Length: 410
Image 1: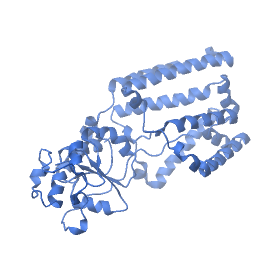
Image 2: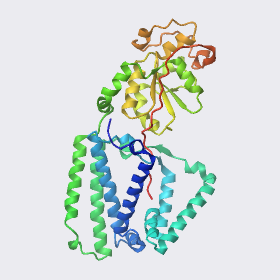
Image 3: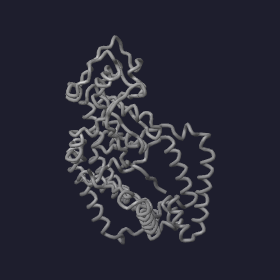
Image 4: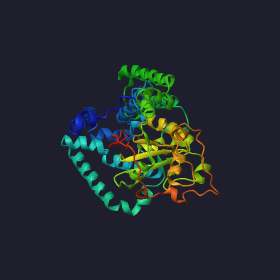
């Protein structure tokens, strides 16, 4: 498993993690201040093409972070699934960006730089920050009036790679080249409108640009790890769990989990649609095995008290799905012991008796005849746990969720 990002609260405790957050915040604010970002005329000058420092600094930070994230992910040092990516709400995001942009032009600050200015007792920064808080208050009191629009056009954890179906390395190289072109263009604008002498600019920036291109090309050549690569890295720890049957949970435990109001139980039926339609459990969602990788991003965003139970006819397809989700760092994933065949053996009197070898090492076919596609319209789809007495060993242990959290920019 990739060591980064570090689970700070696990390593340092809540207080220690907050101290790290405080230090990072202070360093970020200090960097903004010494860059002149607490001075509103300097910030506003970019909209008159006289001083493009804001664009160059912010895009440099974005591009360097992008290159290093995907370089370390490609080397197996970072799990990109645990990096927060703001979910996309297309039209609300566009409107919100326009509103923030107008506020930036009129006020001379963005929310983050206004905090820097206020911290250094600049009067305009203090007034702008007061406006920020007032805007937050007004938004909170009025959001119910446009809640439908505010949550519309949701596209999830959408990246350029997903949008264009282009390998990550090519996107990284393309974005770096685009940024360098923007930097060159911004300097030309400064030369024309700001009368800046480009000959006086440091040569080091050219060396930095060249280094950035080289690292981007390295990202392209290294590539990003596949799910199979990720499984290979953790198989020494996870495969023994499968072999010791630590993650295959008894059907009765599934019923007990569903009675626990502190948990969110997601029943993922990874069988074909045809088998699912013949019979499935109440509340089970059909996610065929081939569709599991595409659903990973949404599962990573589920609350920490979510337990996933994978269901197949025997255990074959569910086991493959388990490997995929565990490799992608989805927490609290379990397999229904014996699959639907064992479930029916327990809760439907017409089926055969339970043979562990038959269900755990079977060919993953449904060994129960149905006269029609009954779905969840038979008692076995939602048995009452109180009508049965089972002896089993509970196996579900809620893991500390390591999923993408936090994020945002002022």
